[in-house]
Image 1 (cartoon, rainbow, N blue to C red):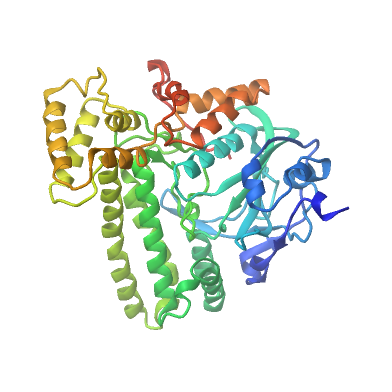
Image 2 (image 1 turned 120 degrees about the horizontal axis):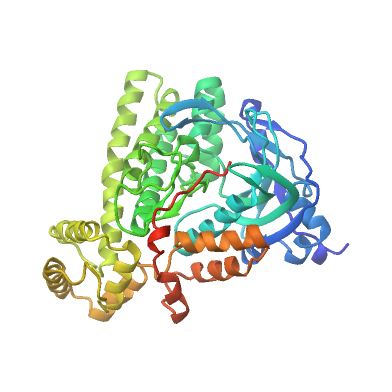
Length: 488
């Protein structure tokens, strides 16, 4: 077969060089009748893959977990995690890492199958996944990528020809996921709790080489690792908050060391602005509510710091002090990123002390008058105030005048402010009722047209095209109390 007709896999298996404690090599768990239903063509091409070959019988067998790609070494990764604050031994209970694709640009990315069957870490589960949750991850991760937020990506979704039982019976599916890596805070927790210090050091050295090579030569490499992860997470969580994204299950095993958004379970985007918003059916007490996400990220990072203590300094007291000093920067870094992003959403280029109150006053009014988060900023961007409860109030009219005066004090023109706002305020997000509409059509009727149309719109959220207008409408009152499920 000529090179042009091969799939294009260029796989290495560097993770398999880590201590055996951290993974279990696995045989594949074939499915009955795989069928490719979604292929992310642009992503596949960027990875150096041949889309036509992926759509062939052999390609589908590889994407569904029936046949290993050339040079792959399937393995399930071990990790631990605090789940809603409770520490557990976990691991890939329904996923297999096939290996690392080396892209034409020289990047190294994980290729993982999700929903690929039982592993030693399944804890009694069947290791499979439903079509709905896999398609949800496809939609949301593509939307996040379009929004410019670091994220894992979905390469494909294939049905299995088998059914699984969760809340109800549904078609089984396998998703091929692409990530900078699947190293998590929970991976370090696992190594620190069940491995030797040399196991932990090997994991940290591998992570430094793979994700932070620029700090490899620093005097205290492991403290630098902590500092860089803190920096990336502060940037990431601020980006979540700025677009109203709610992860839903911010356990420590769902925080990637690379700084990517990972594990889209009961995730959703906020419509009406309310910091207490929770969608996940299992988050009974609002631990992972929208307004709590920055603090939870800090809590998770503290667990990461604890795992690194033996490497940071040989004397525990000194290690704790160094780690605590690093952790004190998180809140300031997050606030700085968030404030910079909020200024941009309001077209503000420079900094004034009063900006904080300007922003907080707007958010207070949005919550008070149940204003839609995305549409409020979209309307301000277009400067076409609509007849809503918020915009008609004397409070908002006064605020608007203060905002316009604030803009007049900067040297940048009105046009430049508008351009900044258009690049900072998405015209569309994955509205929950739109996502459910697309998922229902795909899962219940085998109709993927709504899903494909939705994803096409979400890939260019800052375009402000007329075609996006219909995706801005809010759900009916009967659909406003939205609830998501983990889907595992």
